[in-house]
Image 1 (cartoon, rainbow, N blue to C red):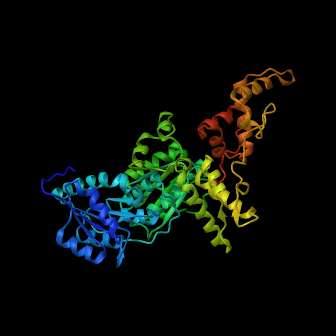
Image 2 (image 1 turned 30 degrees about the horizontal axis):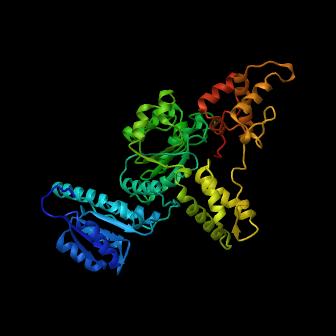
Image 3 (image 1 turned 180 degrees about the horizontal axis):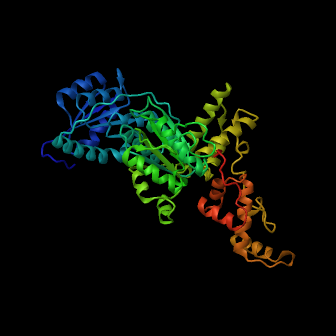
Length: 487
């Protein structure tokens, strides 16, 4: 094991199980490090103060106190101390609180045969570098976890670690991920674990507010600044001064508002609509989007300079289909929460139901899973949920064209579907061009299905809202230029 020093480095391992301590000693024996083992938190801290080991590996649950308490005491004594927390259960709370307190890493015990040596080597190298640089950081404290983010997959463990690392800074964060993946929950976790947690967290959906009102919603307006402005309005930036502002669907923000937002990020000041006074506001921005903003920049629909201002720290939420191991955990979590809210016994999932859920792609992600569990609880006829109790993917928006319906669309091949569409071109003797016809028909049907909601229609069609708006104008049916608040 390579280090920056020729002298052996010391690793202190703390765990209540002596068999595990012996196993770790054997694993690190050939690495050229000195291993000290201890079973109690109190003695471990005394050893740390005496020996000043290069690395501490501590179990979450040890005698007399927990690993997080030991971590907090060690970091208070030595802010640059390297500590790895290990646990058989990598809960959301444990991961985030460990990283917030300054842990080098959080490892689940089941992964140690594959990860221990590599992570220890990396930590020891970092320890040597830190000792040479001697940086100093204040100790952090543990706070009670209240956020509803659930997951034990490696992908979500990485998300929790990032939340723990960025929470104590004021850097803007851009959360990306598909719709329904839990981006707002990440924003709430960042705020909850930050020093701004005692101040307000305000959320605003940039896609759910008409363009002419979004600027007023964010920055406020003066009385008489436009028709309908009967009184002065205080905007969100003033309302959450000292707190956090969550800008959801930031990719749908109009360019004119983007320019003013950029000024706030650069200068920390703005003016109300119709006002001349300069207002300063200390607000941390957490933005979220399910769009590819880099493509939006190329399409001149999003400012490149604003993108780099927002994306100081990026957190990507994986889709649910990419973390299959979290599906049973999430399902049971929702069932438990529903049972508590409705004051009823918790329903159980059958093995067959779990297998079916793990095979389903979950296009609506965690939100769809939550809704599925809610529907199952309402419709269940027993205390065990079977596959038949889970209405997976029953909501369809496929239009009926030339006999192609939502019931048989999935069974058609591409050739069969294309043949059906082309045959429909000449029905009733009327000749039409395929693509313009489909564009018009699909656009109108999407608007009907979404109640003239342009944002939802654009997502349904796989195009941007700006493209949809131009298409509606070209078709002579602008539809509802506003957007309903329901997302």
